[in-house]
Amino acid sequence: MRQSKLLAPTLREAPSDAEAASHRWLLRAGYIRQLAAGIYTYLPLARRVLHKIERIVHEEMERAGAQELLLPAMQPAELWKESGRYERYGDELIRLKDRHGREFALGPTHEEVITQLAGDEINSYRRLPVTLYQIQTKFRDERRPRFGLLRGREFLMKDAYSFDEDWEGLNQSYRAMFKAYEAILGRCDLDYRAVEADPGAIGGEGETHEFMVLADIGEDRIAVCNTCDYAANIEKASSVNSDAAPPTITGSLITAPQPAQVQTPEVHTIDQLCDFFQSGPDHMIKTLIYTVDGLQSVAVVVRGDHEVNELKVATYLGVTEVHLADAATVEQITGAPVSFAGPIGLDIPVLMDRDVLLMSEGIAGANQVDTHLQSVIPSRDMVHAVAGDFRNVVDGDTCPHCGKGVLQLLHGIEVGHIFKLGTKYSERLNAAFLNRQGQRQPMIMGCYGIGISRLLSAIAEQHHDERGLAWPTSLAPYQVHIMPVSMKDTRQVELAEQLYAKLLECGVEVLLDDRDERPGSKFKDAELIGLPYRIVIGKGADQDLVEWLEHGMSDGEVISSQQAIDRALQLLHR
Image (cartoon, rainbow, N blue to C red; front, side):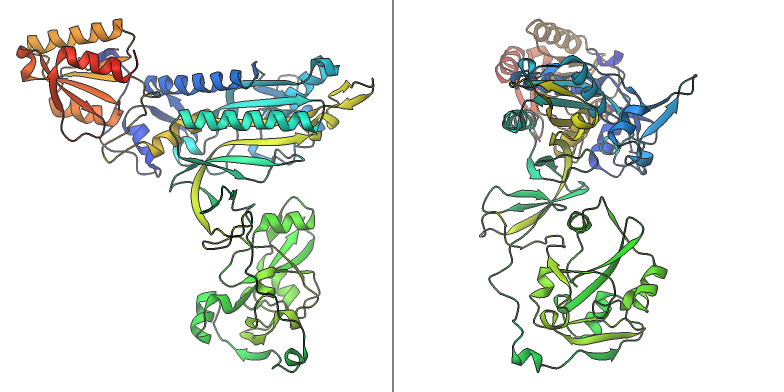
């Protein structure tokens, strides 16, 4: 490709709202342009990278035994109502009506459509198992699109669905797709972790894993063991407490000082409490009031240095989600403002994190204005509370898998998610088949999604430096960048054209910078675009010499033009 013909408008500066490194560099290097919030145009360079990602995905899906199809993006709303997700998806579901008033939705995912297709076309165990996949544009009306392609309203996604006779078959399909995802991310040269996760709005009846690309900008936090292979999303992660057991209620505890009221005017935060009592946050008992389904209320108690894990609370209560109660509700329940809520004497259920139970004593709200309780012994004073795992893990917690390693919290970008759906959709949408005994039963399903456009951004997030992008060779839009320093020098242009023609003939993807621009502009654009190999043709052209650079090299190596060709072919295995 001749760069004079390439639509790759580079920018000297990125827009001020471009927060992620990948967003900044993809904009500056001329890969993408924003049309509206969360909606992007992929320019030719980006499209070439996407094609390479898609080719890797196609190859690994085929290796896993999946078949490609293409499902409609516009889906009848009645399908979503039948599955029970029409209301649950809420405002993220983009809804519309046709001229006849029939409701439709632009697909954020395709469980309903694929399940109806399978129910219509598969009626016998002889046609199972089968795994079907597609690569298609998805639509979600994100409340706050951000980080460029990492959280958009329109995005490219590969979604696959498996249909099996039984759970043993699903386990095999799930494992095959797990390995396929590992291969895809490995071939994309990404540092990632596969972590235990929550099924979220997709739902399911079995295990689920997210594939997280490690990056500081990642909105997800994951817990990783430093000894074994345990890794989990922080929503799902748990830990093992030390061998310490909660104090038993003995005579010494009974006779220990009872909780004492202490006046704490204008002390509202954990930090302020620590200053007031000259003690650490691990000695504080924090009480938060939640509402369940907008009606029932529950108190959740954690240590002052811990955070409530709302997913664990919701899971324990058997509900979809819980919400922090507003200030008026808290005051109605506790008789005091939020800052002074405490666990003792409440008339609502109290869930106590097990780490609170291990405390020998602590400081808690007194359910009175400007008042806290000192010398609270949880095992004695909170006997009506239900103890369990209700907090987020923290750095240094003991791994629940091996019991020896220490958990470390990392930031990650979710690029893939796989689920064991079971019969969640097949039962509701009547996707059944005749089993080996001639009986009708619902298909056992799995669901497997990976973000194609999100992968583009995640790769850029991990593969860039202070000057621009740095694509892995297998994914770069072009592999070799040929740069004559001066288009006015006949010999430089002639040698550049010769190299260009020979490399193209050998099947190398080449970008020739034939623009009549200043050398400084050419070099800056080359660094922004980030191709792996660069051949610079300057004053040495008369002696058939060129400068060979690989991305990251501060100084190039002067070699002959034939050596440059040979090296490119060797590195690219041509």
